[in-house]
Structure formats: structure tokens, C-alpha cells
Length: 99
Image (cartoon, rainbow, N blue to C red):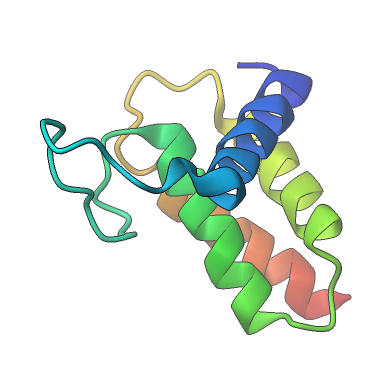
């Protein structure tokens, strides 16, 4: 997924949650808590953005989303995807701590 593709995905998921997309139909499975053990990478990256926004409240959310998208782009070529959100969060946290 390209940088702009990830940014679009993050934005779409985030806006969907704001617009009430968080509610589920009765026949759909229950929602999982926001953990790094998610199999859906875009949802896991949204959780990363949310945690970083809480940890760095003085930073604009758009800056955090950009950093997460950039760090994700650096790892996008990997074949094993399980730890990508963990690695993205760690790298983004380091970058945000320095600014």
C-alpha cells in the first residue's frame, strides 16, 4: 500500500468511526478491543494513531497520521505483516519524542 493509499485508508476508517460507523449490526461479530494483535492492519494502524495522539496531546493528529503513514511505507515491502503495527508505533513514538 502506498503512502497516499494508507493515508486514505486511515482517514476513511477514522471518519467512518466518527460518523457512527462504530455501531454494528446484530448479526455481525462483536468488535475486538484496540490491541496490536489485530489481523486487520488498517484497524491496527488506527489504534496506533489513537494511542500516539493520547500520548502526544500537543501534536496535531494530522502530523501523527503522516508519521504513522511514512513509517508504514518503510515497512510495506515486508512479507510477514504480523508485527508491522508494532514496529510502526515504535518508530513513530521515537520520532514524536524527538520533536
